[in-house]
Length: 504
Image (tube, rainbow, N blue to C red):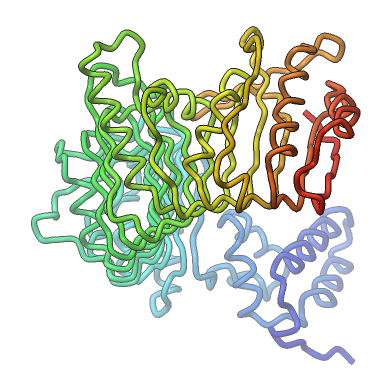
């Protein structure tokens, strides 16, 4: 007896998706239509329609349509899927696509769409068949998630997303990439009362309104997650982010995006912000304020520093960087790249860093040249408990000697765990380029410097509980350091040392 199972018995939609995949493959391998029908009946009849349509919502629409050939039961089941995921290359010049859209909307007239995703990779189909109006209809149906992505080389400067999206009462997530946005109806205000996630990547904002982003955010009272990946011609010289409820903010603006000679700025004012990923390499002015709730920050930027800048501009840049560090000084967990540290030390070598009095965890990437400044940076972290050092290999940039004489407060009072990891990449701001180390030609001098770093930590940390060394067998650094460890004077008797081999 074949008893139907309830939805609760299928808690993992992926398992059912895989099951459907294998059933479909079996159908193709067997030519007998009778056997095909039997397998459909045996394998899928136990599943309720609501569960099947939920599973199909995770598939592109073209794949969910294919299930209509499985059996008569599946013939129109895909039309009940509460979402659409389309690709421009699948849209032919035939009126059939328009009929398909109309039919789908008619069937789902009384239901609310959960998601709508459109991907463009062929320019000729972008504005055909009233797609813009179709997006407007989807918004009017109370869609929760909208994801419109273009993979074309140039952004779609014509506003593709209907202006009605600025007044959606149901939208929870909005993700746009490489498309244009219009501010025609900003004069009537922006009202997105349910929007929690917004990702804007390579967007061109029309009518050159420098306050476009600020106006957009002003109508998102519950926004929690904002990502902005900028392009040089986005018509927004100042990215101003002001939000009381924003918890996560990511900004990316690489030097490879062009726009040299133009001035850009970013201002962040978010009292509830907890996580920030800052990879803006082009903004000349960076302002961070009211970030008392900041828990974690990931910094990879050179602060638009240009070689050959005049001394007056350098002083101005130093003040900007100093104010930015003060703005994030309440952070508890920091990840900082080697290029960022390089810029900081070049500006701050004649003056102290900002104190990060709440910082308990630090992950920092150091090349051998910068290791001499490690104690000075640690002096800015009086409550540090966990330190992760990524040691980068920079060929032809090795100091003659490494003298670490200053012992910061955290080594004497708070530092409990240190991880030292060998990394076989050369970091660039916003980009990582692999540089593989030859097995037999690794600098002995570099190993000596790394050994001195480990010695410095072991012989000056009074409350250290755990030292983790992660080096590659390719460079044999772990062997050299292991042999040197017994010669160190361990200041913390209870400290455990762990050696791990890592792959480069």
